[in-house]
Length: 89
Image 1 (cartoon, rainbow, N blue to C red):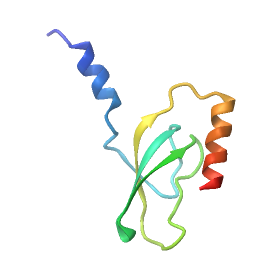
Image 2 (image 1 turned 135 degrees about the horizontal axis):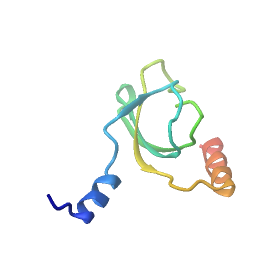
Image 3 (image 1 turned 90 degrees about the horizontal axis):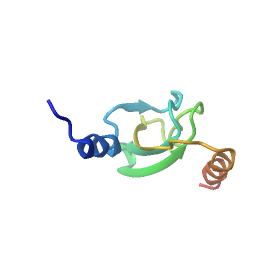
Image 4 (image 1 turned 30 degrees about the vertical axis):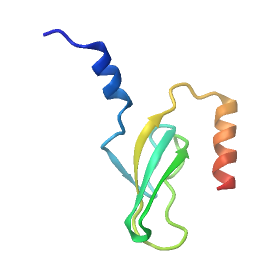
């Protein structure tokens, strides 16, 4: 069976259907969708591998995350920018 390279590439850019819960460890740096039904919030967050997924600062309700865009090559300057952006949010 012949595989279409474009469809494989396209599939790899689709958001992940795997959900991660607040408090668990971020498995891969990237842009994550934030799903939080208590406040009807749908956001995106830039998260860094090895850090914990954040919880809601306003309530104890569960917050779920799904990987939208992974960061392929993480440099020190990119990591610094992500950390700076996260602390300013």
